[in-house]
Length: 289
Length: 161
Image (tube, rainbow over the protein chains, first blue to last red):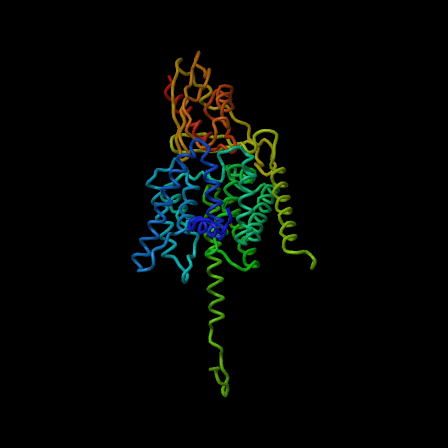
């Protein structure tokens, strides 16, 4: 069958899958389906469907309220999927929905121009963790499956990061994260309950890889220029290890990402302020018409 | 360096990051349990004391488990149940007391995120050998270990004379 003879919906699908959003969404969907092979994953899969329906509905509702054209929100699908993928499958369904709503609302409310400042899924997850002590198992990062599944996560993650052109950022994040954890281990730093040895193993390593490949690379909330990407990765990785060393817990990766997002937005603000500053004119010179 | 293309540079960086990870992993590797914390769960409060299997990146302080009060307490013979719960799930145990001592511990229900094989039979055996609910946390199954300790604690509370 010639590619040109495909029906229109299939052509559209093939075109979409090749876009950055399509690559991320496909990567996440594959991981979610693989993780659902685990018995409790089936509940997680149900949560993912509900979270995605919620996310698409919220985006459509916001578009209606703002009198914009209502489109099928693929960004919402990605956010909903990440929320469901990270939350434990034992999380009550209402909390999955609430987390998704908070995540989506943060995308529409906390903005810089047309772009959200913070990774929406990270906002929702930190909200759920801080107010409801929600369990976060990162099950779609294959934390519940045998260790060799980690290679599968790595393969999909690297492919996605390369396709969305954020691989330098991921490498900077992981390099900083691993190097500082090694330094912690060498210097015997950190908490007794949360050691560098723990962070470098399943399930924490899965969480770091999932965050690095699928959340850190979110185009609207991370820098586009390679040099800034590397700095962004270093900042997020550094903050994550500092938070892990001081407080341990589950939220250190998400909080580090949010602080990195804030840095990225501040950088864009500062650059915009510099580039839009009116040029001082000396007497006798005329401004170009 | 000017002749190194972007792809080659990314490849080299990937190898470097992998090497750093491998170094960290190897350094924190130990023969058995990686980081072992001694858990003492009492109601909603959890206290963690520490032992060190190997100090590599884990714990510098080596603390031998001290004989606990629970070890010296004689229990009523019989079979008692207890449960532990946290955001990662729930588990229940059945503790058998024979001649006033913990004779066996069996996990009767297990609804945690991580496989039961992470803690079973290690923690039930440890409970019997140490005659206490103060067991060592298994790295990678911290929540399951805490729940197990809590469940055994509540079962032993019922068995107290």
